[in-house]
Each structure stands twice: as C-alpha cells, then as structure tokens.
Length: 469
Image (cartoon, rainbow, N blue to C red; front, side, top):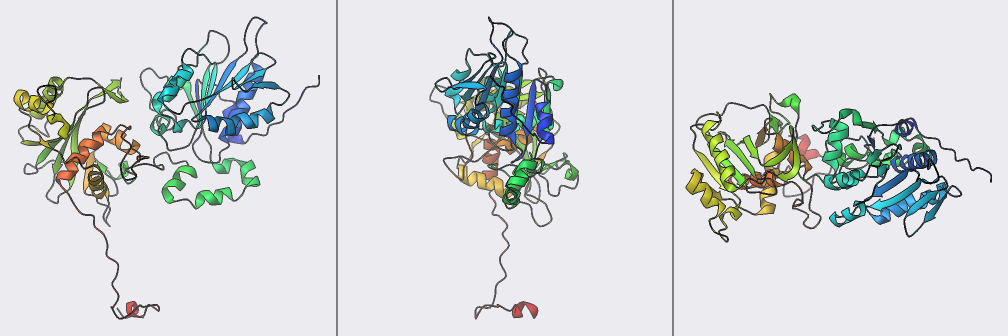
C-alpha cells in the first residue's frame, strides 16, 4: 500500500509551537494566529510518532477539548476527517480517530459543571484544550488532572487561547504574568504569542481580515488584534486602571501608593459575609474633596503559599472573623484609636437559625454595622461613576496598592448574560459587593459636559456663530 504524504507549511510562530516540549504549552493571545490548525497538526504528528511499542500495548492517547460539542465537530472533527483520510479511521459514536499504529485521538467538550464526568476515571497522555480561556479555571484543572499514564509517552497539555472569557485570569497568570504557586514549577511552562500578522497564509488568502480587526471598538481591538491581556471584552469594570507609572502623581490610575490619612478624615468598614466562599472586609477613608480611598482589606480566601485560591473560602466561623477584624482595628496604624463606622450586607441580620451574624459582631466584639443599600444596578453605577477620570486624570476613588485582592478580583468580573447591567454573580464578586455597599453611602452624580448651546432661532451650518466668539 502506497504511503500518503501530507505536507504542512507552518508559520514561524507555529513552528515554535510544534517544537514545544514543556508540560504546559500555550499558544495564541490574539485572533487569527492559526491556533486551531496548528493544534490539529501537532496532535496528528504525535499520534503518528508514538504508536504502540508492542502488540500487547496501546499507542499514545490524545484528547482534544473545546467548550461545546458543536465547536468540536466544526473546528476539529470535520477538518481532521479530510486531513487523516487514508491514515486513520474515525468512529463516530466514540468520537475517536484510530491510527494503524495503535494511537488514538479522542474529542471531548466541557460546557458546564456536569461535564466533569467526561474526565472521571480516564487517562490521556496528551491533552489539547482549544480556546482555553472560554472555560473556567476549575474546569481546566479537572481536564488537566486526566493527563497521566504509566508509560514512556510524553505527558503534556497544550492550550490555545485569546484574551477574555472565564479562564482569562488563570491563563494570563501562568503564561503571560508567569506568577506561579508553590506547587507549580516555572520550568514546566512555555508560551508562544501569535498575532494575525504572524499568520502569513491568512494574510495572503484573506487580507481583509486584519482590516476587520482594526475596525473593532478600541477595547476589543487591543485584545484581538494586539493581544493585550490587560483588557478584554465583557469586562465589567473596564475603566479600572492599574498604572504603576502614576502611583505617585495619582493621575490616570486608580491604584496608588498609600498616602497619609488625616485625623479628621472618617474611616469606614464595609463587610460581605462568606464561609465556603470568601468573606470580605474593606476599610475606606474619605478626604475633604469627597474622594474615597480603599486603604486596607481582610479577605477570607484560601492560599497556596502567597497565591490566593480564587473564590475558595477559609471557612472561618463568625467569631474568628470578627475577632480578627477587632484585632486589626486595635493594632493597625491606619485604624488604631479611630472611630470606625460599619456597613454590611443586610443578610447578616438574618436570625432565622438563632443569633444573627450582626448580633455576634456587636455583642461579642463591639463591631457595629448598618445595613448597606443592596440595590445592585444603582450600586454598580456608583462604582462606575467613582472610577471616571476628570479632564486632568483624577478619579473619585482610589485603592492603595497594598490591597492586593481588590486589585486581583475587580478586573476579572464580567457582565451577566441574563441581566445586561449587572455583573455575573458566579464570579468572585465578594469584594465588589462590599465595595458597592460603601459606594451607595456616598452617592454622587457623574460629571457630564453639556454640549454647546446654539441660539434658539436656528442652526449654524457654516459655523458663523462660533467664528464670532
């Protein structure tokens, strides 16, 4: 039987991806980089190379995963049927290609939490997760846990990705920021940034595509064309800016170096209760101009070394939470000797099962709260108003750069798919909630520049009135 020769012509960036050998390999970062094609090629090359070592064994087991079954079929199964014609047989029911050397390529999807059972009790030597940022961090880790095997085949996970989506922060941390936890070895990670301009084939075949990207709204253009991971579509607080170059002058940034807190500035404590999910306590002060500063925080989130485990509560009982808040207010230089006024989620006054959380705080620890205004849409608008910069670049809200959890979580929040003006409550929104309670205590109206008024008697099509001013 004559051998079939398949020629491939990867771009320079795709060739780098094909040569990657680390445990965790990432590719992409912008639209049009040729991610799906090079993923399929890499999977086929591995399957062709690592066949069964003997008649009693299996060849390499590969899995390609996308968010939905429709995406799997349209983006991979259909084109691979053409690519592998005469080289492998496809079993429709099992969604698996079988190679003559014993290697297999299986296809899976992960669209919701119930799909975790697709990866229970199964092992793959190599897993490809296409459009990885469209999946939640927990899902990505469940998928990755299936990459194992007692054999001599390579064991790797390949991720293709663009900025944006539920997995944005996780992928950004491991491949872009390269911030690793204690149980993560930096030498296990590798990433190739690819943009549409790196895809010479696409540029030749469809030269209008780059024009489409250039004409997108500015925020989306920066993410899809430039591969900017610091901003992406769907971000709820897209105006939130963390610019270290302006920590000192406090212009065009919301994050700043700590400043002295004057004695006559009032201090507030805002609180959102959590047990299995994190609780959040933030301390704020208000200056003479009505500008609010987040100066300190206590966030009940589990950690691995110095890194937070997103949206995972420490499961402290109320007594331990309020004892720690009391200690901080007695000892911390920002708060020591000051009167601190408290605002909290109205839910802590619920006494359905006995003493309420609010009563515990007051009677045992002398911590007083008033119920916060729970209006969500109005509260979020107050947060947006506070983040607006004036013409000189000064906002009405700042956060000290020591408030790491606020800075980590606020940029990750995204819009709700059900309620357009609300944020997605499935996200890590606990800090945002207590921030919202505080903002609703100091309601402001946005500064809107009024358009220039023309005389009531008519239009000025030739600009004659303005010329006389």
